[in-house]
Image (cartoon, rainbow over all chains, first blue to last red; front, top):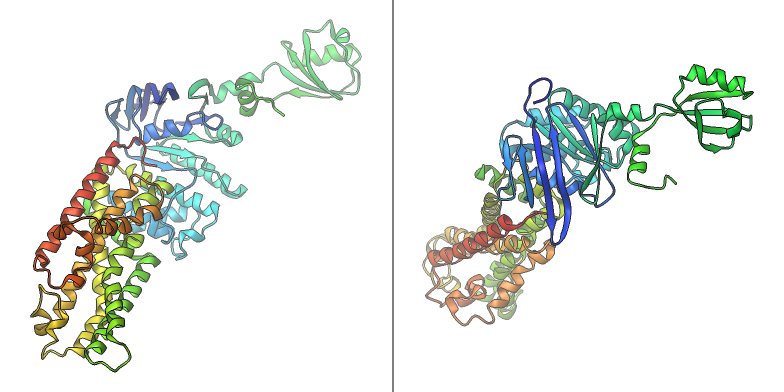
Length: 304
Length: 252
């Protein structure tokens, strides 16, 4: 149960998937409530797609259990939950128009009619009356159509794989708003992406994975907290450690006239101390930690 | 859900360019064959009897051979594209996938055959007026029908060819659960016909069944036996495809 008392849409406990001797996914625990957006981030081959396929019910887990939209998941049973999916390379019937593609998929469950499909197409910025076949669509248009098919039947769980792939800046903003809007309406969203700034902007929580293992879980608030105590100082003074011995401050790095400092002092006190030590401050301010910083640090990547 | 899946596949198939091409080519060959038969009956005109025979032979065997390229490659193609995932995440049970596509292939095949028979129908009425056609031009199991009702004869023959085309396409669907290349799956018709060269039992020989017009004197060939034969092939293909889809850990 979350704070509102709603039961989780997705609950995984120790879910793993083994191919031969290799574990593509190891002991993943995940709880996703209605309206929550969780990002799944990791390098290629980290196990993101495998996890999405387990949740979709396409593959059985080798171990662990859980529930997906009320259906029990275990190594002996494959689920067939009602989820909306958006794949990295959206598949469609290429010779049909966008509307006919949506209508064809909607006809399987028969839960919405053509008017609903038209409305959803309009919401994602596509013309439902356009008769051109999908094979003539740009990548951005395909992404929009893919999102439309994912949300058109109002699924309780959305699984999005690189949703902003190929979108122009306007499209990215629109997609971000659409995802937020879906979450606002109670849809739980699991988002896999390499675009860290987008994940950071949208998600309530981010899970870092590598080689099938969950390496770290980061909440929106924890990223902001990680930046506390780190300052960026711009000065023409040659700041030597001996010069700031009287301050509770450490020089982490220097690049020309730009210094990165670590301190436990309140910034106004630090500024006074530095000025008293003869340092001409041109600019000083907190260093904002981003998801990218955390990602690179956690997964031991060289930022360059 | 099963019937909705069937109609989804039928609508999808008939909207393909390949499907229109299948009908056009089949109609052209069939019409040519009718005209050739006419001219072989009346020597000295445009076509000679050997040419007419050759064209007829190609025409009757063409549709079941090429049909899988328009009707039977969807499972392999959807595995590659990921479209199968979109269907499965709409809570479609896997056993329904293969059977609905098989039925859709048969419906599409029969419709294609019937539509492409229309020019033959017109030609048949022109060449064989209601007073009666030439019974020697008919297959052995329907000697009187061509004479009595040319239109019904043409439609029945077209339906049988359509059924054969749908059945071969269903085999392509089953092959598509093993191979991810749509073209390779569609090539199953060639292999199926190839088995005809080694199967000694005439009634079980798909080559003989597909080219039943070449075995006009085969008394074992009747509309009912044709339907049962291709029905058994379809059932077998559905069982194989369903088992494979259910057993597959990943449908991509």
